Length: 231
Image 1: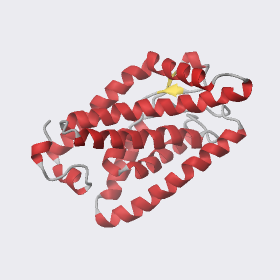
Image 2: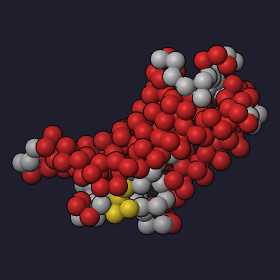
Image 3: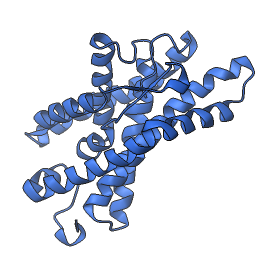
Image 4: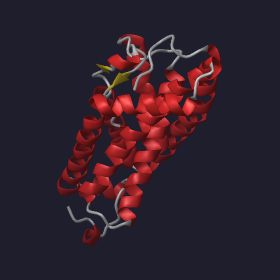
């Protein structure tokens, strides 16, 4: 998912930073507001931030893309469900910044684009997937599973769109390029990683519910209604 340094031209660097910056700002606001209502919120943000950092810290080079991007789990589906999508964008942005500065993973000029795909698309798609699954009365495990899987799919769809847009000025077909790049992601490692991450998020949700259900209640992830929680 990480687009490497130097891939995006200045125009797209500016566009993706402009798109991502408001979401990061709203995420900061949400943290300030929620830490007053939930005393344990900041430690939870730190813990999930570490989880997102570790999840997205094991790059698998996608050889067919000639080094333009890497594949790996993301973790933003889980953070979006527990923290909310805007805070999850901020968490992803911090993780991506640290990786760019100290691990040469991703890049500073591509930070806005990587936040857009992993932070914004990954967080919001995972969050809404979880909420829709809840409305459909699915068991908690499958709500988490869909959040993790859909989050990964949209993250890599976002990266595919960003890379696909680069062919427009060269006379290429955006839709064809984006579809081919997304297909490469799914046919290599990411198709499997989506399923694996979905299962991990599902098990984490069930584990928290069984051990510390108060966390999910206080964060508004679930209502105090065990009849609709089936695991």
